Length: 342
Image (cartoon, rainbow, N blue to C red; front, top):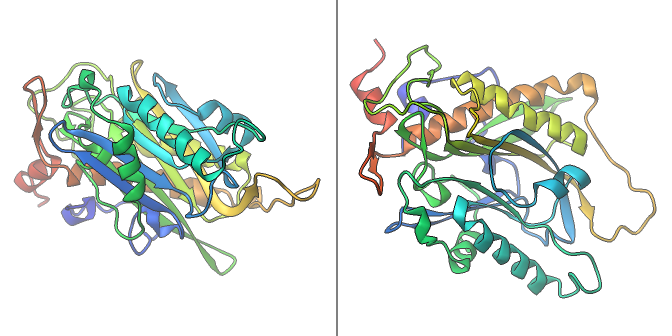
């Protein structure tokens, strides 16, 4: 699984984490389930291994361009918490994934919807119809459950895997990518990791960190894709601050040459594993730790750098693939091997 750094595409000023992945944030796990025959799938991101409904994580969401069909963003924006795992999939599989998350939460908390509040499932999507026959609606609840069951720490498989199996970006095959950055604040290292579902960018617009602009031979004329960015950190931040950090994912996308076209659904969510929020707080007032505003430039930079590298990793890790309509999307890694740096 080649990465951007394998091709000399070093970028950013902050150090990467040991795994250079979202799983550098302690407790965060990622799982994939790939439907190879259909060329689609599901990817799961779990902020911690406990009951997320009972112990929610603080979060902020930024809708950069809203051409999308995700589920659950409105409540995250209003309440500033995440209370289920996050599932990523193709556009027509959102309902199956949302149902899976609801049933999973009810099984763990039978009072949901009866003696306590309902649950807010969180599902993100991109349209992989250029490769996957999206009308087949092949993803089922069983597939979503498999992605959740496969979640683990350690290295994150990237490229054409899970939800990324059928995704493309800038005219190349793309998919899932991840990267991380370390931030030292008052003698303590905090991590910020990004996981992206890259399915965006007009062919010919991609800008590599060294200034080169690779263009695939079969270049589309319009920008109609989408990108989902999940940012995780163990840095104590309030939900307003988390939304500000999520917004900086857009800086990383812009460095690649993206401009978020009219038909692009570009969404970033940032959560922190610090100070989880209990579903039933014992006291009327709850303490909240958060970074001083004059130190927040560091996570801003980390978000932009990790997002930038995560997309490049998705592009470098994905092999060439032919879609259901017969179009072949080349691999950026092949282009980089054919056009090495001097």
